Image 1 (cartoon, rainbow, N blue to C red):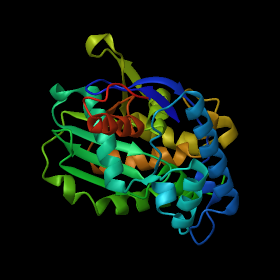
Image 2: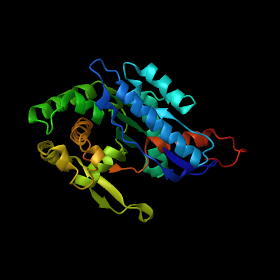
Image 3: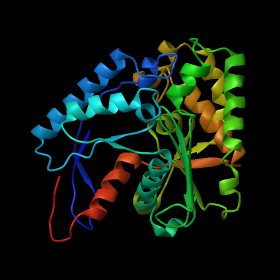
Image 4: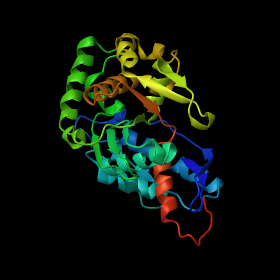
Length: 301
């Protein structure tokens, strides 16, 4: 839950952040539903977020859900229970909308002078790709290659074996092949950008900083370095991965799958390296909200 001060025409200024790590993919049953334990954890998390929002005197709570809830077999029931806990409707984002909002945030962060952008974003349930030269991408796609989903489906052992990692790589390659034609005719990007927490963690592990405009340091993540680290990550148990630079305890279980999905996407899209954006989906949601504010209504939170 991010509390931010916003005003028409301005940038969102974050004031308070409250985070609950759920990793919903751990709670998936064999038929693809979220278990009762998982739903209770969700209800507790949104109740906590609403409590913090009330303490911060938030004027409007923008509640969104993405792939993990969207694609669950019992998604409709889960959404109804979340809405009851929140006391308001929940906006369930489809995959392309998720990609478009993240692209909007990245475009605003990099600015118009960045030219053609290609975006990669990895969440728990899905991987989003978007590309274009404007604020709305010319092409956007969402595929079920998220770090949590792929860990559950392909890397159940700790540490995972080489065969399982290769099976995930082949699955990712086949899945991405279905959406590649959407991007084939687009201009070569001037900047390739990664925007998720998983990508930021991997960049801190294998990437390097370079000077940016206005003195802002940029992180670059090279495909070659990422590829060389995957076997090393896969040989380590999750308990040891959190000792590595950039790998926080809540990402230890999913970071191998995130690395494989990202490396495969970079390979099939012929990306040598990407730049890391500090803005992602939640900033995109805020920016779209700012656009919809009535210019006479003043500031809000």
